[in-house]
Image 1 (tube, rainbow, N blue to C red):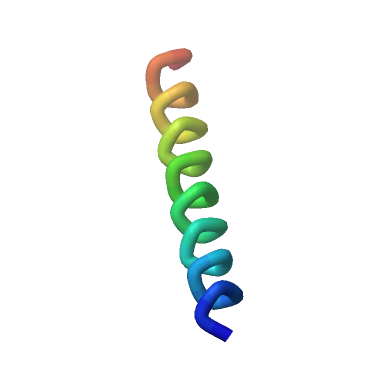
Image 2 (cartoon, rainbow, N blue to C red; image 1 turned 30 degrees about the vertical axis):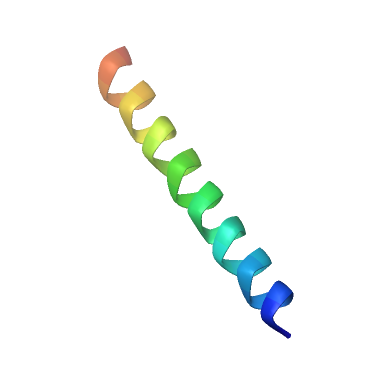
Length: 30
């Protein structure tokens, strides 16, 4: 149960980092 929870948190963190990267790439390309 705990490892599933940790995997979900890790996935959310990667998704947030990916979103931040996309946002910065978009802002810098304007």
